[in-house]
Picture 1 (cartoon, rainbow, N blue to C red):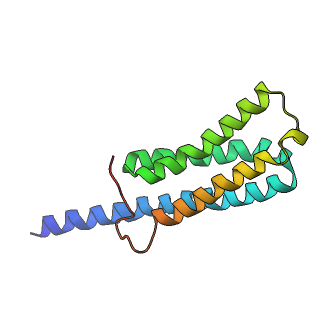
Picture 2 (picture 1 turned 120 degrees about the vertical axis):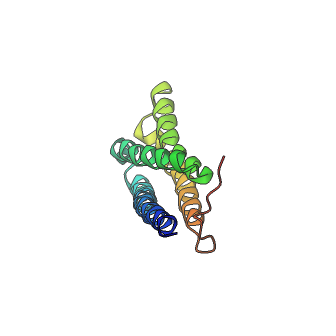
Length: 136
């Protein structure tokens, strides 16, 4: 009986440590997306630095959610590098300059950041103690 109880306790501790790491990366993703969006509205050329940084954080979050089989987290994690890559390709293919991107890039980042904030808060909603885990 003691072995059964101990194995469950060890699993809960491991799950809490992983959840803490997951929360830290989600927090970085939410704060980073808000800050980088606000800065993009002021200085569009800031996306040169914020895009790759946010993409790395998004990929880390995506990998965590693939391992945890959390569907909403996978979408949030994949969306950030996808938007960075999409804007990189669009800017390169159409030879867009900073003046061409002053409105549309920050506007799209605002929509994406809104999704990250709303989705991230839904992912760790206090109503769901199981971290809204949806296995796919």
